[in-house]
Image (cartoon, rainbow, N blue to C red; front, side, top):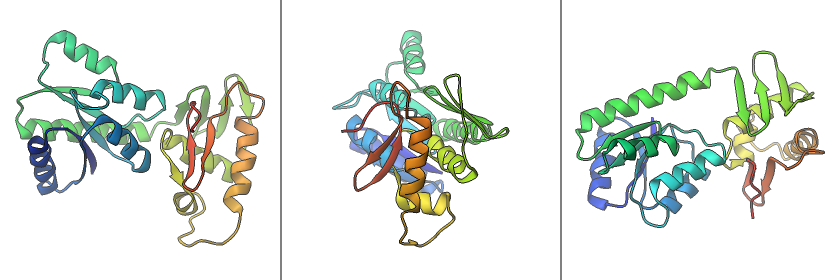
Amino acid sequence: MHILIIEDDKQAADYLVNALDEAGHNVDHAGDGEMAFVMCDSSEYDVLVVDRMLPKMDGLSLLRKLRDRGDMTPALILSALGQVDDRVEGLRSGGDDYLTKPYAFSELLARIEVLSKRKIVDDTDTLITVCDLKLDRLSHKVFRGDIKILLQPREFRLLEYLMRNAGKVVTRTMLLEQVWDYHFDPQTNVIDVHISRLRGKIDKEFEFPLLHTIRGKGYILQKDSVD
């Protein structure tokens, strides 16, 4: 399991990283909300463990920002604030679970395992939605709003992968491996051609674009434009 610990207290972070590593998990650490937001752009995580009080961007603001761009990675909020209103605010801000400090590591680990299973269940859903764009894996139908979009099989597979990673930068290497099953660079413009065709179908004539190019990095599917 790939876990991101978002905690500004170094001692607490080191404890969690070491304990989860000993439990057999791959663990990354971010010391503030802005760093975590960037890391969620470049890597895919199974679970986020988010301290509520963080520098630069607090934990709840981070979760709201991630959810707004379509990143639905399960998140466990850690906080010393344990009143009912605090927990409710955390869950309404995008948290999937809320654990009050101090806590037992065994309980934290159990909650992380439950959240990771929830992601696997969600991954089997036939309908994927990003803003007003909907893709049905079972019927192979795509709609943007009420307008049906006709895609070729490879375009459908490309869009599905982009939607599964909505809000995250998807590199050309990732697309070659996951969409075309290439584990080498074929030295062709196949990705550019298909991205262009897909953009023409899902973005052209609509109020705002969803598919953005990140120069020198890859592509991202989200509502907001990228500077």
